[in-house]
Length: 121
View 1: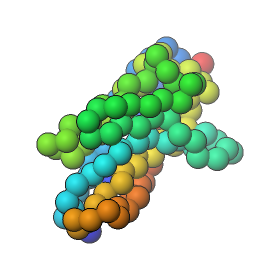
View 2 (view 1 turned 45 degrees about the horizontal axis):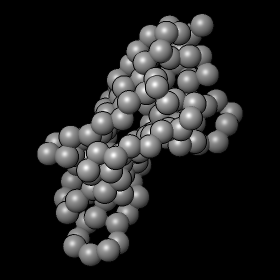
View 3 (view 1 turned 30 degrees about the vertical axis):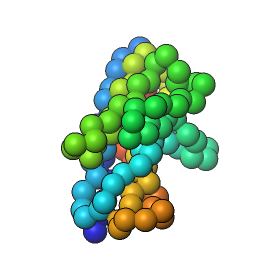
């Protein structure tokens, strides 16, 4: 069974930093784009950042210059470094990945269970 297992998160003061990790486990052929999304309290899930296997990245405007996404393809892991955190970054953060279980053009979107990041002012 393929899973995305998250770690990291917690409570931090404004201006502080955190690092989130995401590990893909199970049997699969490959992982394409991996990403991070977040759900602020009372709001819908929103895109934060994504990274391709080749290292191309994309960020939401609200986190550009503060957050950095990276991945280790050999370890099937993705990371999100959160710097200069603001209270409005408070949210449940979810890891995502398009995972190919067999050779071919079709992959499946998997999600981690989420981890809470709380930024105090």
